[in-house]
Picture 1 (cartoon, rainbow, N blue to C red):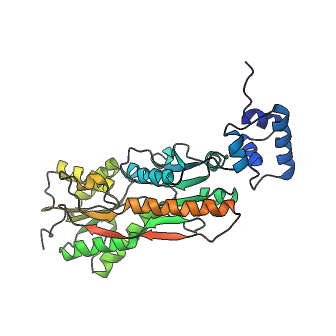
Picture 2: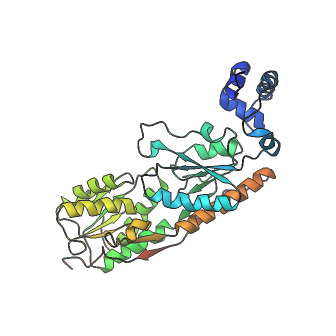
Picture 3: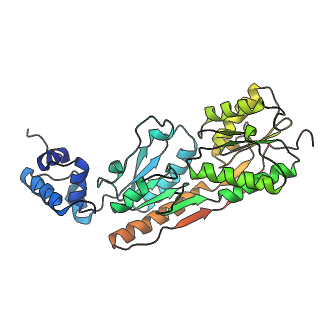
Length: 344
């Protein structure tokens, strides 16, 4: 049986990279005419046909969308990926989950634009984008429709759908202030993410407006994970005076904080108020009963898919538009982990 010809064979014959072959065959921007001609000649000589089938080549459509997310050990992402997949399916599109290991471990190789712009996908949903990421700009330059979900860039260049972090953080600051807490601590998310930056900024501003300081010694930065939250909370509980309220940048950090409080044999909420952000499903479990800021993840997913479909439609019609930003409203969910300050 003859060996099947692949795009790597074409790349070797044309003296270019495999990514260049994909771009040339799809006639995407960024490929020099001479290079494209060499790729087309090599493909013709080798009788190469991309595996997406002749129909996909004719329509320039694969009916697939890449969803870039953190590894699904973080319960937030399955709850967001599931409705995104559902709404994409309603539109006749298949979801291809692309996990980004670099989110959890900066030493790991992360997802690159070549992974997303090789002609395999009609669009891309980015859930883990950092504030200064180059990938959205690269996708734009290569003509790949995409949308950022729950993340923003410092210099907006792409459609983005995120939550009203300012309103959520301000609501939390009002809650702890009204409960009489004056020794407030915080576990912020990574400063490289827009969620980490915005929630930290608006919490500090909300507390300051109510006459409450947030000293540096009562602040920790942590990756969005349980163990990181537990370690940060353990450190904060050793400060003097010990904080009476602990505000966490997301629910997974708050779960870690609850674990640290239990190990310290402190009572919640009598000794310490703990507040999260996102309202993932586990937060409402009776054994957890976490006071948190609710984000409608279904609405977030629906809005993001709507924005992506619009970008795909505009791309096919060679339309161009300015970057859009949409914010999903939030609300405070009062459960069992908040209470009056012990010294109020």
